[in-house]
Structures are given as C-alpha cells and as structure tokens.
Amino acid sequence: MTPETILKEKFGYDTFRDGQKKVIDQILHHQNVLAIMPTGGGKSLCYQIPAMLFPGLTLVISPLIALMKDQVDALNENGIPATFINSSLTTTEMNQRFQLAKNHQIKLLYIAPERLDSSYFFEQLASLDIALVAVDEAHCISQWGHDFRPSYLRLTDTLEQLPSQPVTVALTATATPKVAADIQKRLHIEHEVKTDFSRANLSFQVVKDQSSDQFLLDYLHANSTEAGIIYASTRKEVERLCKLLAKHKESVTMYHGGMAEEARRQNQEDFLYDRKRIMVATNAFGMGIDKSNVRFVIHAQVPGSLEAYYQEAGRAGRDGLPSDAILIFKLHDVQIQHFFIDQSEMADADKRREYEKLQEMTQYANTQQCLQQYILNYFGEDGPSCGRCSNCLDERDSQDITVEAQKVLSCVKRMHENFGKVLIAQVLAGSRNQRIKQFHFEELSTYGLLREKSQKQLTELIDFLTASAYLQASNGQYPVLSLTSRGIRVLQGQEQVFRKMATPVKTNILEDSA
Ligand code: ADP
Image (cartoon, rainbow, N blue to C red; front, side):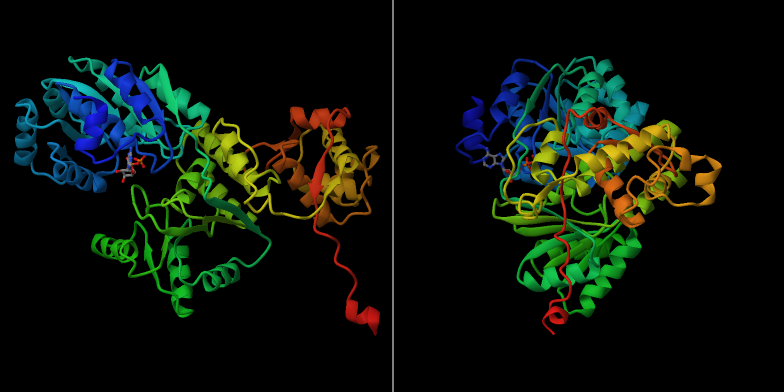
C-alpha cells in the first residue's frame, strides 16, 4: 500500500492537498515533523495515512474532547479501526479499549493531554507498541501561543519515556515563528512543513469610530440571507447581543461556556444545520466546527491575540467562496482585556506576554498596511497586498506627515521616554497644567510645537505612530512611550511617514449656497 492508494481507497480523494504528502513522507522516513497548515487544510490525513502504513499504533493527543468521538466515528465509517479514551468513559471501558490497542485491533487511539497526568495511564501506554504520536493543536504547548495548556508541557517527558520511541508529528493552524520554534524545541522536532496561510476568499475589514450595534444591525440587514458568526469577549455581551438581534427579528442563537451542555448542543446544531443563520458566541464556540457556508465572522469585541483572531476569522468561507472577516475595534474593549490580564492570577512574565499579544492585536486594528499582508507578516510569511481588505480599498490619499511625526518623536525623546501619550500630547499642545510645571516641561524646545492641533488630534497622531511601530508602549496600567528603531530612522531623516487621513469635512454646503 502507498499513501496514494490509501488516500483513494480509504478516504476517496484523488490528490493530496498542499503539504500533506511532504508531511506524510517525512513521518514515513521516521523524521519528527511540525505541520503548520490553515484550518481546513487537511491536517488529520497527515497522521491518519501513516497510521495505516505503520505496523504499530498511532497515538493522537487532542485537547478537543468533544470532537474525539466524531473523529473516531468518521474513521470507523471509512473502515479504519480507531477509538478514544477520555474522561467520559468508565474504568472498565477504558481498560477494554487499552486491551484492543494491546491486541493490535485498533490503528489509532485518541486521548486528551490531561490523561497523561495519571501514572496508571502512562504505564498502560508504555506497554503499547506506539509507532507514531500525533500532537494536534500543538500551539497549546507554547506559552507564546494563544491557547496555552499546562498539561501539554508534560507531553515532552511522557513522549521521551515511551519505550517504543515513536515518531512525533505536531500539527497546528496557528503558529508564529516564535511559537513554531517553541513547539520544535519542546518536542524535539527538526523539520517543518508550512503551507500558504493566505485566504484568497476572505476580505478583512476593521471597523472603527462608529456604534458597533448599529454597524451590526446594518450589516446583517444588508446581508440578510447569509450565515455567520459574531464573537464577543464575555458571556454577558453575548447574551446582550443575542437579545438585541432577536429584538430586530434576526434568526439568531448563542453559545458560551456558562450555558447548560444540552442548550449549547442544541444551539450549535441549530446553527450547523441552518435552522438559525446567526451564531453569537464567545471563543468557546468553533474549535473543530466544520460548517462550510459561513459567509462572515464578525468580532464585536477585540480578541486577546492576532493568532486567536485569525483562527476565529478563518471559520468564514471554508468552502472557498468570498466571505467577510470583520473586526469592530473600540479602545474601550482593549482596556477591558487589559483589566482582565491585570486582575488575573498570572505570574508577571505571563502577564507581560499577554499584554504583548494584546498590543499586537491593537496594532492590527490600527495599521494602514494591507490587513491580509499584515497577518501573513505576523506569521512570518510574505505576500502581496490583497486588494480586497478595508485598507486596500481605502481611497483616502496618503499624506506625508514626516515633519509632524519628527516633532512628536523628538518630544518623546526629550521627555526621556518616560511618559504616556496624554502628557506628551499636552506638552506638544503647549498646555499649562500642574504636571507640566512640576516637570518643567514648558522649558523643552518641543513644548507647544504642535499647538495648532487639538489634544484629541495629538493623541490620535501618537496612537497612529504607535500602531505603525514608530513608537512602542510599555505594558502595564500606565503605558510609557519610547522610540522604536523605525522611529529613530524617522528622526534621523532616513524614513518618511505617510498617513491616510479623512478628507476635511467641507463647511455646510446648504449654508454656503444660502
Ligand atoms: P484541519 O484539521 O486542517 O482543519 P481536516 O483534517 O479536518 O482539516 O480536513 C478538512 C476537510 O478537508 C475534511 O473534510 C477532509 O476530509 C478534507 N480533506 C483533507 N484532505 C483532503 C484531500 N487531499 N482532498 C480532498 N479533501 C480533503
């Protein structure tokens, strides 16, 4: 049997998708490999086919307990003997399944990583002839990932101690270069197969400076036959939005972790089987959901990281048809996320990481670069501008604001990179408040340098320079601004700064003609 014949005979497909064959070949050559492919890219086949070709057992580690049964059922339907062991089973059932594995009656065994915490469980595994270990959702092993799970950390030790010395394949849909390096180090993987992450059918949009409720209602009205998901950060907001949309006669349901299991299942099915067209949910909804005709994913609140965002947004348009991925951005939501991190019990180093991820997310919302390209760059890939996103379609003229930017950057420098944007804006505006006197900022050469601008215009300008990575904000409750290397280049006259600005509103035409 070859991989191709199994692909055809067991799965009914004629050709491999991008990257699949390469991953399979490396596994068959007993090389550990990390497969980074977008959601829907076909990661499962990358270990299911080798599982059929190896004489031993394939152990699949997956955090998605709810999906294990579906995956195993699908394999069994294709005539592939597989089973799972998770907390839903009794001890007797577990032992029966271990026995099947020992007797070589199954080819794939799915388990949740938490199982590995039990020494009894490990002893059972150690007695099996495991040829391949597939670590699904492998980004969960990295604290730099967006969904870190402590139980994944113990995987490394467990895999090392397995007497059969299996090959390891790690799979994920979201890995920045930093996360990928982390996965490779922890799982002793030297090879990586990464496929194209761009989603040619998705149009990314960032919506700012308007009422998000009104935007949602208008959008849903204009796209009244399409199915889509609306994500919010809190259960309370999910419930509020669901009520609001129902009041406006939308066909809507909801999903969050605080609901009873039965209600969640029911609502999920209503959405999957097109009985309800809109799903309002927290990020608890969607992992592994395979609904192909999702035409839009709208984030009504900003998520905690760009990785999480791209994964959730990527649930739109899995059938390849044009679809929207929209982020509604409000600074207030970022502050809420900040507050969550602040109040959490995390260690300081973890908090810093979370702040950093949030800042990257904020930069995405404020960049004027092509949004698809921005995301690809973030994942360590290059690509041309997409021509479809809200930035590519932004027809406002770019203005050269180099001189203005130099004034701001120079002011930040003269304030010894030790203050936040509000005070910097006040110094540039030449205001006379107590703090300015206290620090003698009125004596700075940059004091009042941009006094023709309003305080609001100045903070917006500083936000723009931060979002465009000329300035960087320290983490914490009162972020302090400092220059980046890019900012220094601007100050030295080596780089120009361009900004798209709203065309100034003309004076009231009616009045003029009166
Ligand atoms: P992922 O885990 O990467 O999100 P899956 O493994 O669930 O993706 O695969 C997504 C869908 O693509 C599944 O319905 C799967 O059967 C299908 N698929 C996978 N490989 C191929 C292929 N070579 N040809 C056609 N369809 C495929």
